[in-house]
Amino acid sequence: MNPQILIKIENLSKTFKIRKGIRTFFTKALREISFSLERDKILGIAGESGSGKSTLAKILAGLIPPSEGRVVYQENLLEKGKIQLIFQNPYTSLNPRMRVGEAIREVLYYQGVSNLDLETHRLFSLMELPSYLRKRFPSQLSGGQRQRVAIARALASYPSVLILDEPTSNLDVIVSRKIVDTLMRLKEKFEMAYLFISHDLGLLSYITEDLLVIYRGRIVEEGSTQELLSSPLHPYTQLLISSAKRDFSSIPEREEPSQRGCIFKSRCVFKKDICKEEPPLFLKDRRKIACWLYQN
Amino acid sequence: MDNIILEVKDLRLGFPNKEVLEGVSFTVREGEVFSLVGESGEGKTLLCLSLTQLLPKEAYVWGEVNFYEEAQKINLLALREEEIRRFRGSRISYIFQESLASLNPFLRVGYQIEEVLLFHKGLSKREAYLKTLELLEGVGFREPQRVYLSFPHQISGGEAQRVMIAMALASEPKLLICDEPTSNLDLTVQMQILKLLKDKKQKLGFSILFITHDLTLVEKFSQRVAIIHQGEIIEEGETKEIFDNPQAQYTQKLLASSFRL
Image 1 (tube, each protein chain N blue to C red):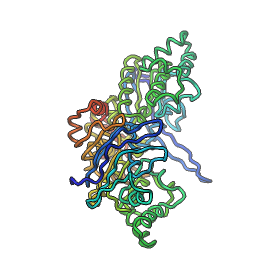
Image 2: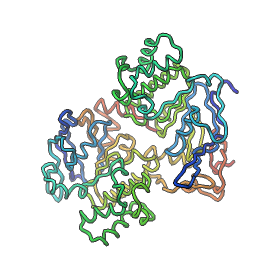
Image 3: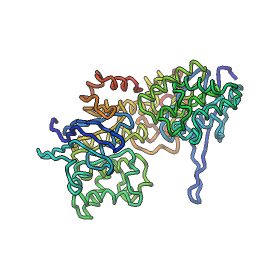
Image 4: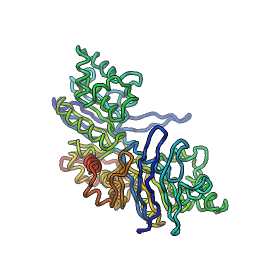
């Protein structure tokens, strides 16, 4: 594999089985997703709830297996702790009965670090956390501090890839900005690649270089963040951006997503006959778009 | 446009062990959207609740909340419980963030809207039923019958918020208080709800007191805005002026910190 590529995903699909009473349903959370995460890059994934973005994060971290397709990792990523996950709610990822300093020491201990105190102290100062907070329990910290602790713990194993699943959506504007700025600084220092999952296009435009837009488990558009946001091609991306800009002139339709053919069909203003078929990803100006409008 | 509908004067509120708001004053004019912006824990929701005496008993509230109706000034804080009921959920309606939590899970959605009409409007059962269907249709449901018969758990978050709007508008309010009405919804659904609010406001001419932390939304949705920080309003004025030229240091920091497209 190309040494620049850290994680490569090929034709990944994930189907969940849902039992309702005696009946069993299958929902496709992800369908035929392919992309790769490159060294030192920040790749953004934008999508609304139910788009499958968190499922994707879990599959990449190896927490759940894909139903179809494969995930290929760069060899050194397979060592312990090289891929780390940060979730939206750090409360659920920190042990409520463990002092936060202890939580970090634990990781360092299993990494075989000799001077635990010094290293914990260093991680705390990296995350701009005052050292006395080490003795606190997660419940005694503010939301922003908890998220910083969660990031410090992730950094304790010197990861090469950080998967951030809506890391700041629970936080206030100013706190969230500070954490994002810290993350940007750390990326340089640790030479990490980030996979940044969010529904906040403003945030993604600020930090990511490349962007994937997913809708109902499918990639609908892929390209460089700047180009994608300044001239969106897929009708769904266009809708998402005008919504993020709070542009009231584009009235969003309220329709259920389509089951067959193009998933965005029923909400689309450019609907044609061909949309009954599922569109592949078309290539246009270094961008990939799953829309029949860009067939040639 | 310049008629004042609500005037909050030096409002202080808090709990025995904690002061939340330390003297807040602002006015909402007829037919406008007035936004209150602040971080979590600033007491925005408590402020909303205090306007119609909905705070828990242990909380204290000082100051004046004047509601203007037909050139009459009514201090809502001085009213007795029976009197405030003529305003709460009637001339002043609420929409909250957790719309599903505001609905009674044991009662059909339609019945809960009817209740408002029976209590505040004094309609007969039959009239209330027809009016409810009309209201549901008015908030964009194509099959009002289905929603009427649904229980809250059978509808989606966006649908629940539409139901809440129908319920809030059932009493033909003069002032609609929206406390983060869209923050739990998807972006595209948010826009549908906001568009609905905007259309309804234009048609029915009520005022909106809008609570949010979404600055892009404030900029596009409201005419005037007040920014709350540490229990006080630190800046208030026309939305455009404040966004173009923020005076307070905190406002500048807030605007600089927000990620906007």
